[in-house]
Amino acid sequence: MTTPDHTANAVPPARPVHGGIKPAELRALGLRPEDCLDFSASVSPLGPPAGVAEAVAAVDLAAYPDPHCLTLTEAIAAHHGSDGVAANNVIVGNGSTEIIHLLTRAYIGTPPAGCSGAALLLTPTYGEYDGAVRISGGWVTTLTAARRETGFTWDVDAAVARIAAERPALTFICNPNNPTGALLGNGELEVMADAAAAVGGLLVVDEAYINLSERYAEASIAALAGRHDAIVALRSMTKDYALTALRLGYAVASPPVIARLAALQPDWSVNGPAQAAGAAALADGGYLERARAAVAASRECVVERLAAVGIRCYPTAANFVLAQVGDAAGLRDGLARRGLFVRDCASFGLPDCIRIGLRPVADCIRLTNAIAAALGDEFAK
Ligand SMILES: Cc1ncc(COP(=O)(O)O)c(C=O)c1O
Image 1 (cartoon, rainbow, N blue to C red):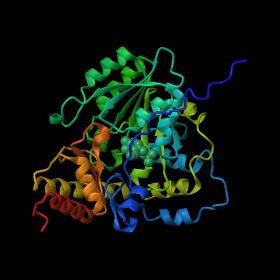
Image 2 (image 1 turned 120 degrees about the horizontal axis):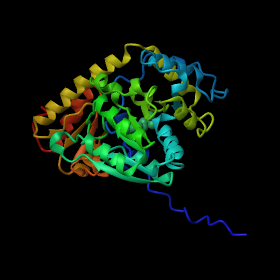
Image 3 (image 1 turned 180 degrees about the vertical axis):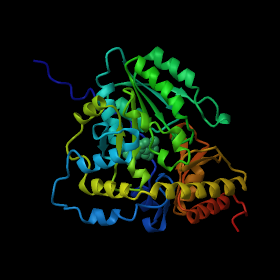
């Protein structure tokens, strides 16, 4: 009998870097959470919809949550109803992060016939795709947006050629992209999805930020995801409705893909308060429109005020702004000492940039004043 080698996988791949304020850093800086503003995570600037707190309070904390998220799944299907999305086109997860990991376990762990165990990533982008692929035993290939000058957009023809040549089990695209804010139209995404279908793979379109973009109608692919066998659209209710502490996301895809992901999902991964909050959030029909208006006002404020002190912001279709500041790590640390947290983009390969998640205008004025002060400028007065 051979002895299993428990040391072979002893060193797991490094975890991706994420935004969000870490209590350990606050302690080290001697700051209290209530004195800080978080611009390093990009969620709806409105906070949770009005009915959410009441719905959460009504949950029986002594009861197991529904492992199938039936009520919420039906509410999501109804929300996408005009696109022909049914309940068997939807899976709910503990944040869209859980679904990213289910996808890589299912399709990188056991690639479809004719596909490699690779994932093609359109970069620079969200780090969790890379992390999940590696944990699942696969490897990553990348197509990097060639030029900052063109707003970090990708060459779709090059992506199609790479899919045909490399036959990746999964191709990930974040739309709008984190951290650049670049946006592809749904026609371009469909061309890539057809290329993925031709090799038996899937195109995963992470729409974590699409609902907070004024351009969602020209870009969203969720409408097609129920009908196109090679498309998986990911949505983050964490971000759409600021349910950040609860963690909630979902995917829209064809029934066989949903069934394959569901077979791998641990029971009860989506807790009861999150399920109740999600259903209450969807019931607030005007919320997303209001959130998009708030994002637009904050974006204008940040871009204008940073331009006034000579800081370039890249065009963004999302609820965050990528700003070229030079020494991003130094600026980030200086702002953190004042209780203002932005994301330094070194982990994306952009060490001269910070990403600013758009909060309400008053908060954005406080941040841009602090940036100006850090740069020794007088514009804040
Ligand atoms: C592009 C992108 N996708 C997904 C997520 C994860 O979101 P969730 O809270 O739904 O897991 C994030 C979080 O930062 C993200 O930036």
